[in-house]
Amino acid sequence: MNMFIQYIEKSRLTIVRAKHEADRFGSLEIEPEHILLALLNDPVLISAIMEGISEKEILETINAHLPRREPNMLPHDLPLSKGAREALVLAEAAADKLGHRYIRNEHLLLGLVESRDCFAAELLTKRGLSAEKLRMQIKALPVEEPERGSTRPPAEIDLICRVNEFVSRREGQSALQLLDDYMGEAGQDRNLRMCSLGHFAALTALQVGDFSTARRYCEECLTYTPEDPMALFTLADCLDRQGETDEARRRVADCRRAGLSRGDEYGKIILGWLKFVSRLQSRTIESSLALSERHCCNQAISLKFRFLSIIKSPHLSVCRRRIVGLRITREPSGSGSTF
Image (cartoon, rainbow, N blue to C red; front, side):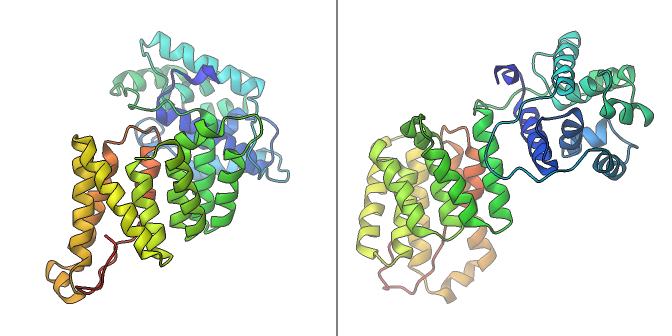
């Protein structure tokens, strides 16, 4: 997959979505048409370059053209077809000719249009999208640089997308099974995978309400990094939800100590978040409403985002969505709240 090293995050995600489209059709290879379907998910591309072309019409035409088999459900790799590989080579050449260092979705679209013997190219050309017109439009667009930390392997991006899909369909146990299978894959370094995806797995389990699994992932993260603040905080939340208040308090104290020991901006965010949650829990519901419930919620979400914004992790955007699902409990004063 080294051919994707020059792709920005958005274009890498397009390739992952193309694989999902291939899986949806039960295809054995990723075809150019799957890449085109994936590109329809980019609203900037649609509005800036494909204006006047009906997305619905393209979708319906490709759905009618491609053969359908049983969908591929389990995690696996799919090869690029000869036509798809040719389109990606042309996309790379197009970016080079335009003097662009990184490959964006616009280049992928241009590669499709320039492909030979390709239904996707025929479809686009019939709708008035020529290679020359595309080049002129691409030159007029601002150059998009790659995002920091966008070095996650395509296999992990694929896994995260699949997990997110299961969660969005309320199939939480299927999502967790995918994560368990990936972490325990024979011949792979579990420690490395846990360091990369442990937080994501724990927060996913917490989001779907499986506190035991969330706790297991947190505890395993802590065997590798005993003073991991996010793992400590999430573990405390799990313990509190399971009624183990004393142990939860101990973990909160560990999290606070980890924050103090860092002495950096990350540590300040951790301490600020713990202080904020403690303040919320020490109020009665009536007094907290003086700030308005919406204001409290917005403050909490804001702090959670700040808590994550400086963690040096390549799956920040996914963790941000997960962390917002963590519980904020407002209990009456003197109730002995964990945080």
